[in-house]
Length: 163
Image 1 (cartoon, rainbow, N blue to C red):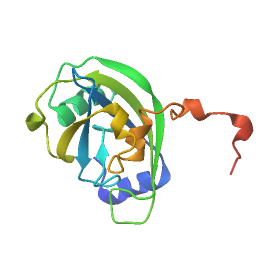
Image 2: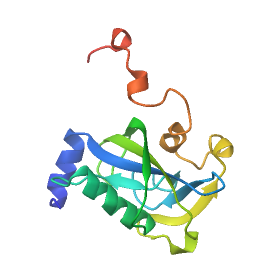
Image 3: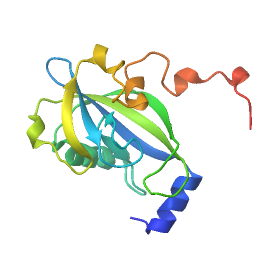
């Protein structure tokens, strides 16, 4: 782990790479946790986290499934690449956060009471058709259930101005 001030510099200067887990139970409901930390603090959000420096994708995926869900053996289906932009960051300092997110869909049926509480204060299963209109669910989580929100689905270089 980087010292705090170096980590802030990284977040101010570069996008972070992360993995988000779209977790479904046998009924097709989607698992969301109430975020404890910034960005997206206080919103319902999918489990996930960033890939660490010098950590392979497979090791990161296994660590995140263990840390976020308390699970070890999970099969995953790639959902797509997404971009998340936030006006805030993990600290109280005024700068933005940018994530490039690799989203994976998984099946999971453990009891909510067994889930870790380090990143989320509570968990709940949501019906997919209802989560889109729920104001307590973060926009970036809603994107996983909407057409045309993947990063590669938005690319049309004729219409993108260079800064």
